[in-house]
Image (cartoon, rainbow, N blue to C red; front, side, top):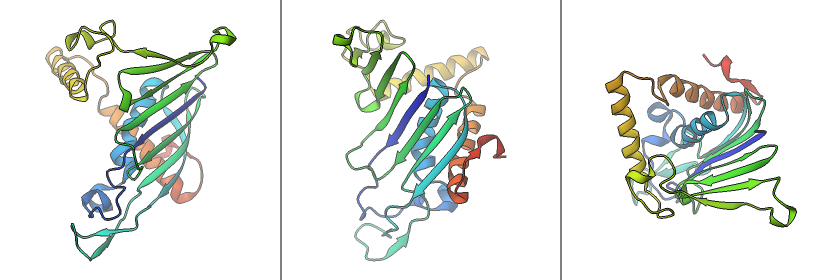
Length: 225
């Protein structure tokens, strides 16, 4: 693997008239889109590619003020980022880009990634969660291109919900699998992932991205205490 491009973009705050709430304040939320959304794609990057070691971030408040309440003429300042992106370097040597936004018009569940390797690539988006795009560079020249693989009962956990390939399973089905794994892990006193250490690692990456934006330079994630 040589490159990871990951996003978690949504548009739940794209409307500038959407009223202010606790997610917009540093005291109650800390980070904005980074904390709300990017945590998921950073965790995904760790699982698929490995630990992120260095980051260089850029954060932006797109809507600087929002109504104090629905229909209110009073405006309140937004204190944290609406969108952010970061260049990242993995411990493996792979490069990457992480993007996140809570004001990305048209994106309802834009958790997606593209992983590029020396012999091909894969692409996934949560909005089409029953599909994985696969490219194999060794295919004949006249057959090269991304092919679509449909999830089915041959894949882990799918058959518990549906026996037909391509029918797909839902977001809440995924939550059922997560709860099962949690209960089984606790009952067996067995290791589970993600665990608290992974949560700490993700938080360090997010804090490093925010600090690198402040300082205008690359930061090593290990420098975040």
